[in-house]
Length: 110
Image (tube, rainbow, N blue to C red; front, side):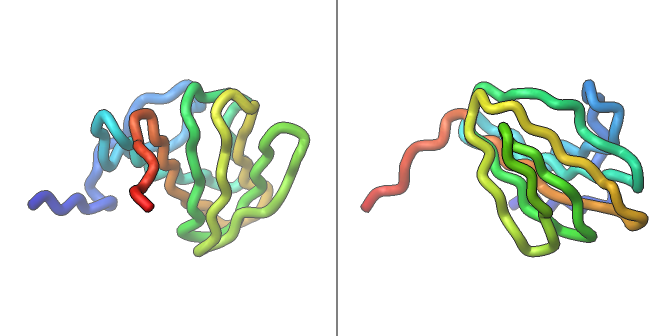
């Protein structure tokens, strides 16, 4: 068993220039913890796989395609592959969320 402490996970280099910690990576899933300080944002980008964002602390703006909403603690939003998206912290508190990408995930059996 491997237990990963998010407080000691190393920061991963990323094109957004924000704190991003790779917590778990396999051929089926990638889990990254992102911390956005007030005023920080991810650059508008697309991914070749489906992803979802899960709010852990604070709140931030999520933009997916032409839609814009607020991601709060304990909320989840799906981001389909190939659709431009970004997350922003327009508030005055830290905004932390998980990014879960499912590059090789298979549908659950019914």
